[in-house]
Image 1: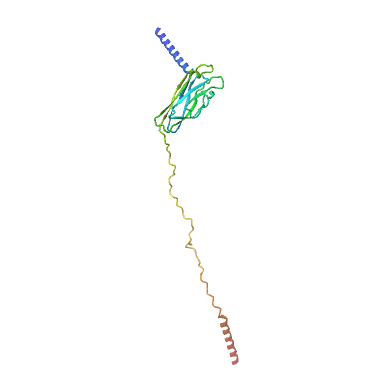
Image 2: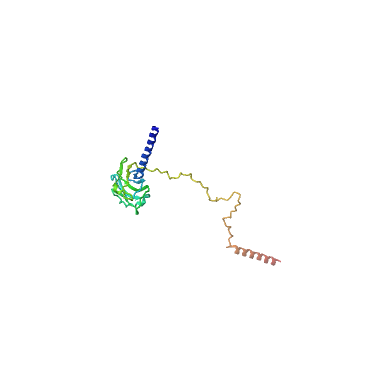
Length: 235
């Protein structure tokens, strides 16, 4: 009987501890940064993701990064926890703050991507270099709508420099096709074999000379007349 009671008490204690741990996690504000990779000269985006949020009203996170490798290009907020109304961040700032408070007096309880910082990796960065991105905060600046401090946990991130990837492209030249042979379209110039072709004479007939035709005719006519007259006289 005592053994059974001891086992029951142990189980109850274990459940109490687990519930206590779960409540502690739910009561906090947990932010995680990504561990990203990029080549020298490239841009890289690092998300600030809220993994747990029991309810918060004011946020102030101080961000620092390795300026020998990274340069801040921009910070955008959202799409989640947009109710916090963060203040803008200046481009190129060597350190910056994620500072936001909602317009109303209610706690913000959402999770997800709270902000995204975009950096440019230095051209002089070498493969294998690692730029740490760290977040610190004053607990008095992390409060809920009742003015109580919110237990905050931050998981820092980094950017590791990798070798630049050269994209491979497929050849765009189309294969060469064989030339197309076309039949001649000019009609033959010779007449078909069975066609009767009549060739007109190319030489005009020579007309008789007319210059001496009349004198000769006149002489013949005169001679005939004289013969008739002579024959008549003889009778």
